[in-house]
Image (cartoon, rainbow, N blue to C red; front, side):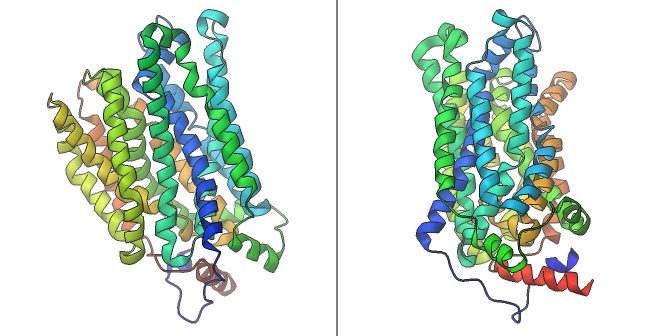
Length: 454
């Protein structure tokens, strides 16, 4: 796979005929909608209010109820690599559109079912067991969602604007997360703590189903991306799911992806799923105040993503990735210490620093990662590498840091964890080929030439 990393020469094929801008915009919205659905669930489930309520209604009387509530988020990540290994190569065989329709519908249905699930008081131990099963099913389907959505956008977007359009995938992430947090806040303020524990916690989960149906409708109106259709026209539909080919032929670049995603997901899940409970449990900030702070900072991130994505089309993806990794190495500890200073404004400043560094990565991953692989294995290779890294390092970030804080008494573990992830990611970021301005067709041609030479 090392041959694919080289920048294609001018003698290789030019970019395919451009897709009409209106079609690109529809593809971007349909893809981002699934990502929004995924993170709407995380936004609801990991908000300080819902984390506490889930602990009380499904693990009553348990002193570790909050930790178990966070563990329910983490457990879904155990099966994500299996979902990626199943859905990713399947998307390379039968097309991106069909697989993405299944993943968004399954994700939204699982979130909805949490909202109608009986509590421990009603059905006893069966309640947390069913909740665990729903988290596992959702984790499996989520394993096929992100890689497919990023692939969908990258294969539709024009080369010179791939960074711009790819950044909207993470706008979807933050939109879903902010919407989830905002709904929890609105419901909590409207019904009060007693009603929230009784029935109010269900409302945000129930809204997931109509969101999923809207996303399904948008995806059903689109064809598979031009790059995939061109591959099928040239070679015909693959006669097998190329899982073994993906793992055998492209493992060096998959490992490179894993290394970068370690930082991405430790930072992402640290900020979005760990910090709400960190604020409430360890910094003694009220649930509603913590939610407002997080929503405000995430809105600021959203405002930055598209300009940063467009900037990467001009200066490349690697400068932004390098700046983020170095920034986390240097600034994570001071930022966490600011959060602990005991003042609301220092907490906001510290949180904003780590959020800005995350924005530098989020703005370019939708354009960077799909371009690391050729079309015939793109969905599968992306999904496998991304979800293995996410499962091991991202989804577990909250549980690991909470455990380390509780057993060492050191509240700085979020900073240490971010710094370790950044130190790991620096190497693969420096090794990453710069793909800004490189057409998808040239990436495919370079790969085909490498395979013929082998």
